[in-house]
Amino acid sequence: METITQSIQGVPLNHYILFSAVIFAIGVMGVLIRRNAIVIFMSIELMLNAVNLLLTAFSAYRGDASGQVFVFFIMALAAAEVAVGLAIIVMIYRNTNTTDINVLNRLKW
Image 1: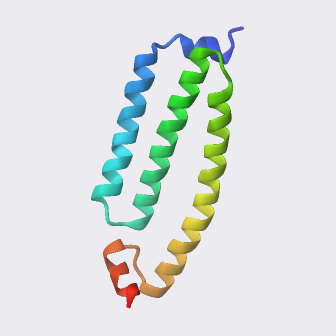
Image 2: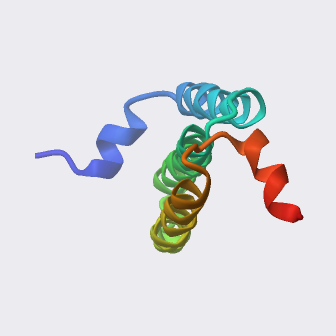
Image 3: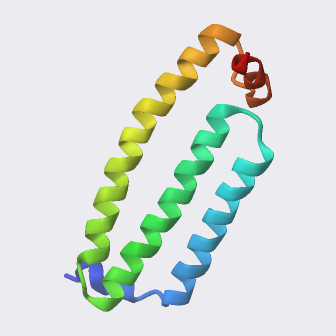
């Protein structure tokens, strides 16, 4: 029975780099183009997942577990971000009845 490291090393590292770059680019475009706060939030999560995938792939290829430890901390950070971010989005929606970030300029005054 093959281990996870052997199955990850069966795919060339360039494929992981390309796939992570595509996922990260989709996340960046979602943050820059979309105006819905929930979609922007999901795009940030996509970028974090792209970094997690790349860290895991590099960690498996090098045979070092330090990349996987970073992935654990990034996942913990993402969970905290989701809890705080969704609470903020819900409170903004209660006040403005929309999740459009262009409407948030009114909250300054």
